[in-house]
Image 1 (spheres, rainbow, N blue to C red):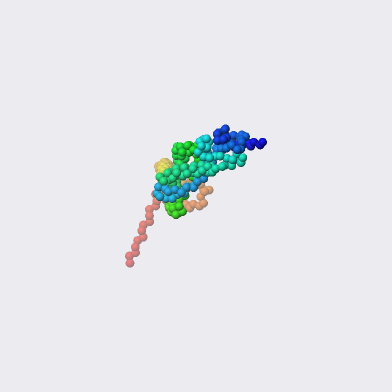
Image 2: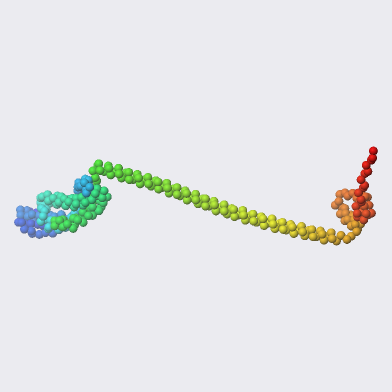
Amino acid sequence: MWIPYYKGQPTDYVIRYAAGQPRGEGLAKSFFYWRYNTQVVAVPTQSQDVPFVFNEITKDHQQVTLQGQATFRIRDPKRAAALFNFAVDPATQEPLSEDRDTLRKRVANLIQVATRGEVSTRPLERVLADTPLHAATVLEGLREGGTLADMGVELLTIEFLLVRPTPEVAKALEAELRETLLRRADIAVYARRAATVDEERAIREKELASDKALEEQRAEMIALQARNALAEAESAAAASRITAEAAADAEKQRLAVWSGIEPRALLAHAMRALAADAGKIGSLNVTTELLASLLDGGGKPPPPPPPPRRRRD
């Protein structure tokens, strides 16, 4: 006689009933069974995803759509099996009820209730801006509430993938945001222009300061050159004056030697000096009148001739 064999899945917590009494249980349990009086309950313990889409009303009476996904798992299989029917056909391992989907719907309903309580206390703008905060708050509230724990369920994550207002409100928000962005862009342009003007002014001021410093240095250089030139001219004039005075003193001393000599002796000495430098003299005319005046007059010039007398008619 053939006796069937049941092999449990690695993630299923299997409870075997015979004649209405539990005969064994465990994770991934396998056993032979009598088909006429055996019931098998397979509670899935793997993580399960629950997608959801909620339409809620914010504090300022604006409709918003929240789309996301939650992940949960059955942490206490025996408690979950007491609340939901996880019976399977031992031959095909197909579920004999829809309680698996019922569990997912109940989890989604609890998430929607918590989300509604969170969204209804915030205006639309905060709901749109604080999406990660909403997910964390809803997750923490469901974990602390105890309702899921009573069902033997542990909520792992909640993620809001999309938070969207109605199309009309979205257009209004887009227009307002667009205007805000344009104003920010204009402010940025004006700020950039102002910064450019400030930089150009700073550069011009630096150029003027540099030109001023150069002109001041140039003025100092000109004044220094003028002082140097004046000092040089004064030194040259003083040197020339000293040289001229020295030459004049030397000439006076030289002439003082001849001051007491007779004119004839001076003439003789002069003629002798001329004779010594005759090679350097081209021509020299000495008239007899000059010699006679020097020899006869003792060196005095001849008296001027008497003026002519006028004739009387």
